Image (cartoon, rainbow, N blue to C red; front, top):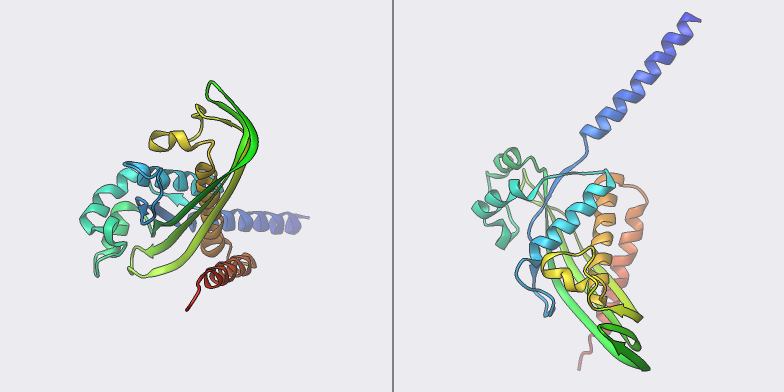
Length: 237
């Protein structure tokens, strides 16, 4: 009986030790200011850091990452000129990791934004509330790069897409959720596409950096479909 209890205690200790080790091995990650290379009309001053904060919140909510606060990143990013280049200067990565506590830095660039609005007939507008009359769709593409803070190498990269469509009821003055420069986009196709892209980015990073299982095939298939779609859209004379 005593031997059985002792073996059980060892097993429990082993499980607890494994759980502690797993928690300690969560990747520490920092999200730099997003950049814009698209013609998005909603992009204005401050949006880059708002998107950074939103992605940081999504990553933190998974429980899979230790997310470094922006305050710890600002100075180092400025000194390294990382906000502009997305690179780590040779020989300084390890020092940067020690200062910020980040093993990885995520850089996001909005490379494409498209929005299409079509009339559906009818429609009624009264005091900022629109009922029917139009349907809007939005598409957003974000190029993600995950830089290893110690080596300076890009360990992971992927183009993430977000899509949305909307119609029916829209409340122009609704300001919940989004803040700052993006406050007016909360209930718009653009805001929904942004949210969709950030959730997709979070799922991708959780897959390739933490889970590392069959989910990679799913994202590989999405990437192939995106490339095929881009190729079909190109017409060569």
